[in-house]
Image 1 (cartoon, one colour):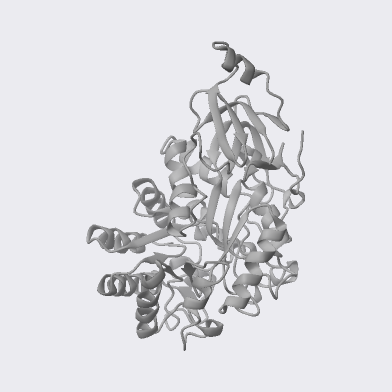
Image 2 (cartoon, helix red, strand yellow; image 1 turned 45 degrees about the horizontal axis):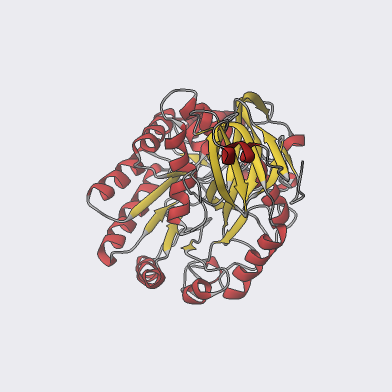
Amino acid sequence: MTSMIIRGVQPYGEAAQDVEISDGVIARISPAGSPTGSPASAAASQKVFDVELDAAGCVLLPGLVDLHTHLREPGREDSETIATGSRAAAKGGFTCVHAMANTAPVADTAGVVEQVWRRGVDADLVDVRPVGAVTVGLQGAQLAELGAMASSAAQVRVFSDDGLCVHDPLLMRRALEYVKAFDGVVAQHAQDPRLTEGAQMNEGELSGRLGLAGWPAVAEEAIIARDVLLAEHVDSRLHVCHVSTAGSVEVVRWAKARGIRVTAEATPHHLLLTEELVASFDPIYKVNPPLRREEDVMALREAVIDGTIDIIATDHAPHPREDKDCEWAAAAMGMIGLETALPIAAQVFIESGRMDWRQLCERMSVTPARIGRVADQGAVIEVGAPANLVVWDPAQTTVVTPAMFESKSANSPYLDRTFAGAVRHVVFRGRPTVVDGQVVSGEVAS
């Protein structure tokens, strides 16, 4: 195992510390530049480490955990692979991602989820946790092998047909009942298919003016309302993917006040971008659920701050160039987001003074790890904790260009934008995977 020290770093943006790591865990935390006291402390200061990382002026955070990532493999390796997606995740500060099931073949059997998991192990840059499909082939007609996936080597605990809604209420009820046996959670893509047939953007005055079929807010809100009541009825865990409307926030807030076991996520793009961008007809802004009104963005931000929305999840959705470089109606829906999630969250919540680093870590590390039941991720920074860490440098900038992406795709809505701060180093299971902003592919850097 690698021994290392991160010098002069500020855990959660607080006092500067030297953080020692050994055998994959945090072995010691001491004030930066110390110790100078006891002989034992003096000896510790002279230790030779395999890796020394200079992090003066930087912020130390627990490694980020993404509950909603599309890695596309198997089947769409032209968009992304588990290897390239792992590199993108590491560069963005993530040490764990949950790979969605809408692959080809669909991750609806123990065999497919184990394949995804093993390829994540082979990449060895982040913890890749497969998400199992709720229904066979994402067809919404028959429950998938939920128990077999849960008991497989991948130990699946999150199940979702994301990209499609589990629309049949009886199937949704059965899925919620089934996952209780192994403390799983059903993550719902809340979209009534009948209310969104042919939808191209948020329904409203702008969609009428642009002549694009609208995706009404009620199509999301109605499904969430139904599903929180089903979750209450069977006393099971429900997670709502990519909440995008102010009305959805109110439904989730009501459900939580009622004691229903529901959690919810918002994406960086729904926390920053609005439907006005669609007026450009640039397909880079085409996403599902669609970009909403300014009022919705503000409601989502407040919900993240007060905890109604539990986590920030990327919904990283890579596509090859030809699927986006076309007319709006024919373009695929989705944006990449692993490498820009932390800069956006820092801008929206830290730079604005609305949250501190501990609170943001709850939304981007601690809570998503808890929802996904990932035991060795999302830990508090303390002696004995697993060494899954990210070092954030507020003095640098993140300049978004196609060349910066480790992802195989570059369908980002933030090209040519600059964000304050940047991921400087990442430690995964006690060894560096990113040093000075560059992925080191498991090599021991010095």
